[in-house]
Length: 111
Image (cartoon, rainbow, N blue to C red; front, top):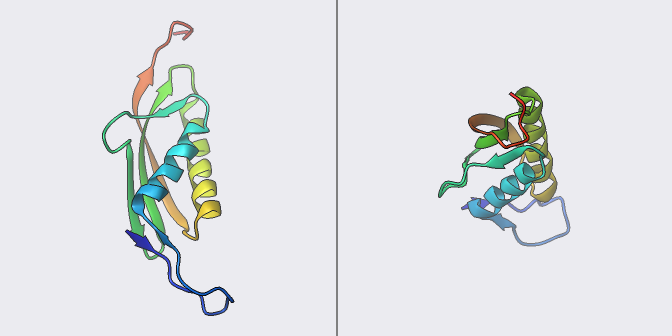
């Protein structure tokens, strides 16, 4: 479970606690917002998170459409994850590794 410490410079009292599952769900939503990409459908949802002092290290395994520009999609995934996690939590994202594990060949794909 991930924990945030109280910042004594604010007027709020108490602490905010985020479970790893919540952060993982935020990452999943970020990936789903990128067109042409889907997470691998495994029991861990294709997401591995490591909470380090310098920030969150994320390993993401995805499936892409055959007509997609892979480098562009990987960059969009990295940006979406960084934006969503940092705007919804107080965590920083230090690194996002995107692993293309599968390609979706649809009837519309041009080879």
